[in-house]
Amino acid sequence: MAMGTDQVVGLSLIVVSLIIFTYYATWVILLPFDSQHVIPKYFLPQPMLLPSPLPAGLLLLLFVGLFIAYVMLKNQKVTKKAQ
Image 1 (cartoon, helix red, strand yellow):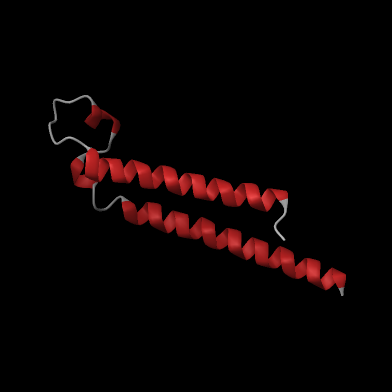
Image 2 (tube, rainbow, N blue to C red):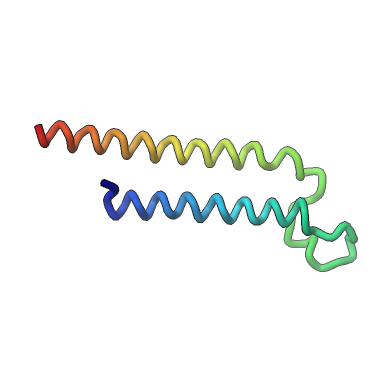
């Protein structure tokens, strides 16, 4: 069963990924193409549209993988102590 800190870390990973997804989806889908509008100043330039998800996705996968490895090692230690 997940402990309190594991749940907090997992929830924070979910929240961060939702924030990144919402930002990128807004950037790609809803951003007006008119450069005179005030909204584009909150986003990266248009040429960064395609290369930017790769590092963000790799970082997210890295953190998720590290979290899963940590939880598995922690559970393995708990089961060894129980035996």
